[in-house]
Length: 296
Image (cartoon, rainbow, N blue to C red; front, side):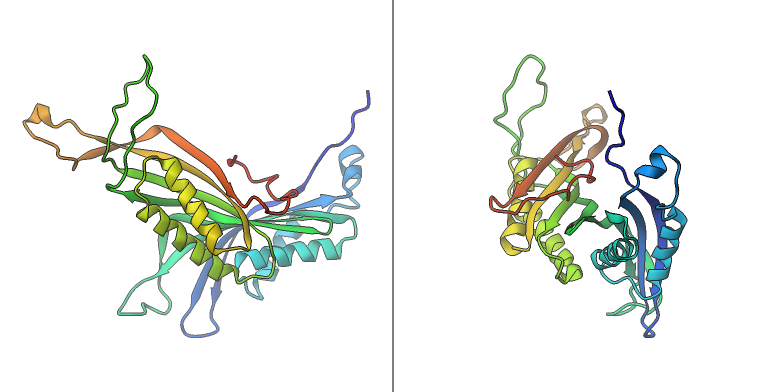
């Protein structure tokens, strides 16, 4: 038996960075966390401790900050810039993975346009991307996390099999709530990523709101289907969506009725719905999904 080195990568994780664009009196804020990981001819450092091919993780961190000096723009483009730099600058680096998570800020409102230089954190919602370079192949998987949505009606759940352990009662009117995490694979690197992201988000929200849902799975599929119908540059979209359960509070002990108005929210356990919605003719994904955890 021979013991050999398998797949490997290394880099600097979660480089927090805030960029303020000051070119005009109306400022813009970009708040991101960047992870850079390199792949290539790195066997000697693992087997012999030879650092000749090790681009220090500190160097990777500094590169992230230095590149931000020229602007960030769409996070996909920033990740592509970083990937091209490392694979072009070091012959033995043949690929890697560049992940960016972007945190949302809104302009504090004052009249129609809001203040030029004042912002408020826009909740837990995050935009993200992973750019993977594998030799000549480049893939981009982008998405959104922690997008919390709720329909207060127009949701049912009935017709499911029942056995001795089933206690859930059927309903034709319930609250449907979830926290959407979605990732989609782009089929091109030449794209207005900001505009596309905004449109994909809008389509998903509209599909969730307009679907009279008989199951969270049905809402999920409609969200993915409608995105793919509008955006041929996306090959597939994966979802991970917990069912945020809202249970009706029993107010009878207090001599009160509860006509579907007062609920308590259970944070666990919860239903977890995951699925991929895809084109049947989408090109092979290669290694695009290798390091995107939490999605089937």
